Image (cartoon, rainbow, N blue to C red):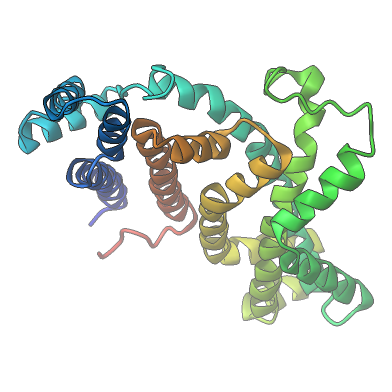
Length: 323
């Protein structure tokens, strides 16, 4: 199998996986009882409506959401609509789900992107600590990383809110008013970006240090040092050899951040991002929005794995040869 064919197979697998998840999401919606039907029945019964009126209202509700069609027909329509980015409308506001996602996702990206970039400092710090293993610098950097790993994000976020944001009257927290990508107000998103970067930084630092320690005693490093290679050149060779396992950890941690930490950070900082949108949809039983936010998380995971495979392809020339 050629390297190009290997990469094409990975892309095809990602597409198939995405549609498989979309199908599972459809079955979840189609086969689970719609809670809104119970709400309609309960509210109309309390208002004194007859059984015929209640049944008529429920039939009208089913027809408005195409629930009276066959399962196969609904599945085909679902797959087509998802492909065309027509993910329905919110039950609460009537706004298209894709429009809601586009509005709220920019606030999430406004701190996830810089937070992710900041966390990459952990790679350099990990290599620096490994090159000075056992020294006071190594011990200090290790202690800092252990503290960063041990402090829960929700606790750290609350500390930042109480002792930084609330203690600074001039700090503007009106995230919903100012544009997320407005450079003049971008300082708003620095605290959540730092909180998000903390755990990812610590994980990258510890793992990079461990990988670097493994390679620093390798034969190729000894040869480089014997030839008078600079520390930077040695570090570059060590990083290239340890890049694949480090990249695996980075991808896994980043997806975990999107799935878990986003909800905590946005709740504490009151940011109207993807996590806040999902929480509100769950509380309102707004199924189209819930499914939409779920699909975003799933697509991020699948896309992250695809990018990881592409990085493997670029970093390791052996991939695809002889498979």
